[in-house]
Image (cartoon, rainbow, N blue to C red; front, side, top):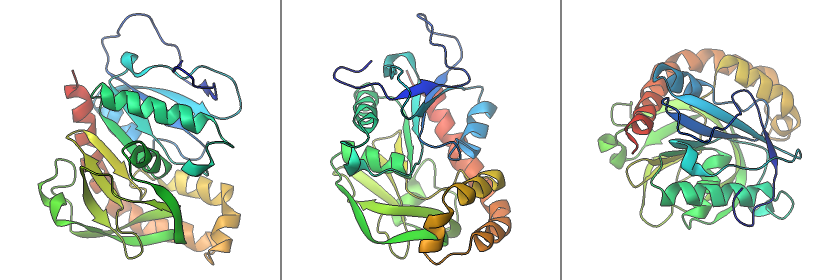
Length: 259
């Protein structure tokens, strides 16, 4: 367990850690809610023959492992805020783990809450947004994305699932890759193998339905009918799937190339 970290999760699925290094590359996955799974990211890792060790964060006591036993780190979304770490101590442990992954040069991918924790660790303060940004919204790539290893071939603008109430300042040394109408930074890169995506490119239809069911009050508070959110998913997911495959297959290649 990380020094000073409090336990806050349990292993699921392929959760057993071995003392020796396995021949298969392996990514540690930090998950915060049952409906927010790796989705299309997991599909890309499987195509690259990269194993995953999911850790579902919550109230059950279990040690958070160290990054030395893994080749990459994936931090998913969830219904928490980074600045509520006193209420949810496992967030502090996660951010120490992210810091450790960065020090070791491991590939890191943070999605939504994961991108916020990564930004916080890198020195980009996280704060409540002026208004929540929820729905199927336009994402516009920044000029720097044209030369980016993950985003280089994507169309300049596309519609994706956006679902967040917090935003962050771009960390010093990071490169902004995408924005939306309300949010200046929807994606960024730090160094050559560390990425944060505030929007949800990993979504599948089953995940959208599960998240709508789990967080229906948040949708209604934002004036969005749950049925409309699911209907829009049917319109956009088929177009997003090849874009997601490109982005996540290329991140998987970074994991395979990691020392």
